[in-house]
Length: 256
Image: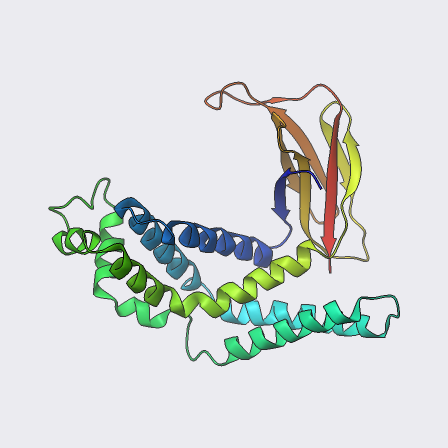
């Protein structure tokens, strides 16, 4: 398969939350690998954003609910003869392991980090533009100048409370994305609209374009239908315009 640009639109708040957490997990993992002080700072910023998100609601409960829902649906596929039963069994086992891990977490995810003095000080200074200069928080500046191995070990320790949640959310989104094959579609004059099946609950819309495409989709979705406008821009500082030509693309409406 050729490389593609993939754009996703969640259709409920739970999936929207999972996608945002996935984004933050990816940001943390990307910066964790690099040794500059700026990468360490960005990894900490991702940890603080994750901590903020998990503190807003019962993320653990929502993740458990979604895993149990998916697990129940996959269990129903066991009786279908043409299903890849080996792959299905692996997925079900992975879901069960994630469920066990989440149930084993006592209290709120990441709760011990709420008492971390350095993280709390960094979080407070982040609200001030340029608030993390050397003179603002010298203990942080001193720590950033320690060896990369030391900083990386501490970052991993701080991220440890989120590891089970990361595994669970990655698995949930993987199952959703792989639940439906993409189909070829055409947006006439840059516009496409589709009615959603009333007897199925679409969780995620995925739009795929060639990697060298100079256009992008703007997706608007409701309970019964969704529309896609394909836009182009010569300068990102200016308002985008709708593409006037027909646009071939691939579409997946992920239902599980």
